[in-house]
Every structure is written in C-alpha cells, then in structure tokens.
Image (tube, rainbow, N blue to C red):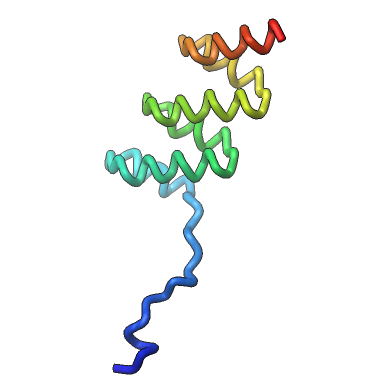
Length: 99
C-alpha cells in the first residue's frame, strides 16, 4: 500500500442537510443526526428547516427557532410560535413591542 492509499480524505466538505436527510433523521429518531441538522440549520439561519425540524416537538429545534427568529427580528415567526403556546416567543414579542 502507498501512503496515498492509506491517507483519509480530509478535504471532503461537510454535506448540507437535505429535506430527505431531515426526514430520514427525524423518522429514524437518531438524536445525534437530528442535533446536527438543527445546528446546521441554525448556522445557515434557515427558519424553514428549523420550523420543519420543530414540527415533531423537538425542544432543541423549537428553542433554536425562537432564538433565530428573535435575532432576525422576525416578529411573524415569533407570533406564530407564541400562538402555538411558546412562552419564550411570547416574551420576546413583548420585549420587542415595548422596545
């Protein structure tokens, strides 16, 4: 074996989660994969992906969604979450309204 054959490929970029990957991770219940998808969606500021991940009731996804919506000043998303009973979103909306 040559050195080239034994080296691992460290230059391969990390894959971006796809809707299929999201569905697979949530369907199989793999918590590590789900956490990774949530983290990547938050880093990309992808409210749609976080919304989809939170629909199953994943608390981490919901928390990230609330945090990102707040950072982006997305009052419509915070309002939607507050209407669904999310107290954190309701508190943030109140803070934004009171300035």
